[in-house]
Every structure is written in structure tokens, then in C-alpha cells.
Length: 358
Image 1 (tube, rainbow, N blue to C red):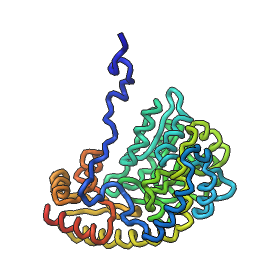
Image 2: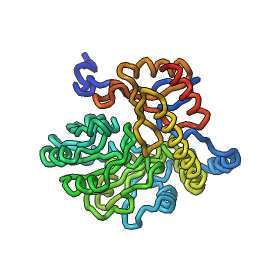
Image 3: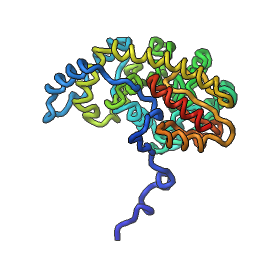
Image 4: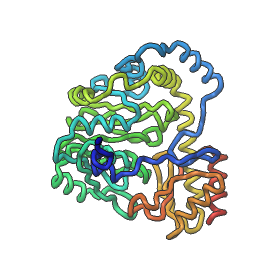
């Protein structure tokens, strides 16, 4: 008789819940850090003409060379650094874990942080070590991080820069100390680079163990699922061995290369989001009982009065607005919601609904 899932599936996988994506049909979607703006109609027509030339009967370019060239030119990736494409940054995180996974090896990151660091470490059979951020402002507890690096000797250290879900940008000198002290690879995840003016991309090569991870999702191309990893070629050559063949489909390659040639449109949208982020923050700060946290990303973390997060989340959803409820995600996020910066109209509806619920 065949073995059952209960008998064959790893216990740590059975203990998990699958990643949940809520149904947003009919709602103003402010839960997933997406760019709320579409492309102008003329640009859409040009893009569709590009797609007409895609050869769906052929496998895509395995290296995505056209996209790589566009990324190097538009993002200022140093010519001396290697470049690797992934089906979203999630796949690249998985490739990193698979490359370094061995019994007893660990992944270290900061909590609360991006949930996929912990999940993918578990998928790869690695132990996850989370170092808590400071409770008052989510800053780095640098003595605790340095102590954990020495004690745990992680093969991989992930730092979201800016951090998700808190939105803050860690101190540059503290990051430098972590890279200096880390015994393994350090991955600076700059997913929200379009919304801040600080980056370690130009400093690749200053440390032999530093890689930078980015995605095109937050700048307006979430539907393409395209991430990229850059750093010393010796590292990327090894990581590339865990990449599945043809991982970036031909439609994504054609679309991304086209979009990057028109990056000025995306940059203009990014600047609009940054300006609207400031306006939204000021409006939230003016509401009695709320504590919005300063953000260098395209979202704002909000702490509500004690015990109000769940009913506020439900009330907002009933009013047609979907945000992210983080109340039970981590002890430091008690009573917190996270709202993506939308259009001025969407943000206005959200603010009116929030005041009504409160």
C-alpha cells in the first residue's frame, strides 16, 4: 500500500501553512506594495507590438542576455560584477539557500523582516536565526546582531534595505560592521531601492562576501516576476548551478527589456509615489491614537490603539479597502497594519475609511 502524505512529507513542511494571498476582487488593493499606476496607452501599444515578435514555440534565451544588458545600463550595475536573473527575487533567495545548504548550516536575518528568508531556509533544510530589531523604532540592535553572527556562524545573512514590513533604512555604518563580521555571504535585499536614495550597489567589490538582490516588482513590473542578483562573478557562477533552465520566460524577457528602455516613465511614477508617501504619512500622523512609522519604501507601517488592529482591518475591508494585517505576524508588530501607498484618490478613500472605522 502506498505511503500517505502524513508518512512521506517532512514534518517541518506538514507544520506549515501555504503562503496565503487574499482575494482582492472588488477592493482597493493596498496590501502588496505594488505600483498603483499603469502605463500610458501609447506605451502599451508599443509594448504589444514587441510581444508580437516573441517566439512562443521556442525556449527563451537561457541567460536573458537582452534583459541583462538593459539592467546593467539602466541600473548602473558595475561591469566587473556578475549578474543573475530570477523568477522574482524569491527564486534567487531559494537558489542562494540551495547553493549553500548543508546539515547544520544556518540562515540569519532580522525580525520582523521578509518572511521568505525564514520559509526558504526551512524549505532548504537550513535553520533560521532571527535577531529582533529594537522595539521602539525597529532599528538594528547591532551588539545583538554581532553576537549572533559569532555564535551561529550563518552561511547566509539576509538584510532587507529598506526593511519589510517596517519600512525603515538601517544605519550605513551598522551594515558595514555586519558585513565585516559575517563569516558567510551577506545579501542586501534592495527590493525597495526605487523609493530611497541609499544603496550598496556601487560598493560591490568592497567586500568579498557581499551580494545585492533587487526586483523590478516594486517599480511597476510586479506581473513580470523578475528579480536580479549581482556581485562577484565567482559567487554567481556557483549560484547559477542551482538555477532551473529557462527560468525567465520569453514574454517576461521581452517586456522587461522594453520597460527598461522606457525607465523614465517608471521613474516618474516612483517620484509620484514618494511624494504621496509623505502626504499619507502626515495625514496618518494627524489622526489621534495612530503611530505611523517613517518609511523609505512604498508602504507605511501603522500602529493602532491596543486591540484595534483586527477590527480595523475588517472594517477597512468592509469599506472596500484591503491592507495588510500584521497584528499576529510577530510580537513587535502587535496592533500593526501596513498600507501600500496608492494613488491620491485611493489614499483618500483609505484615510476616510480608516477614520470612519476608528
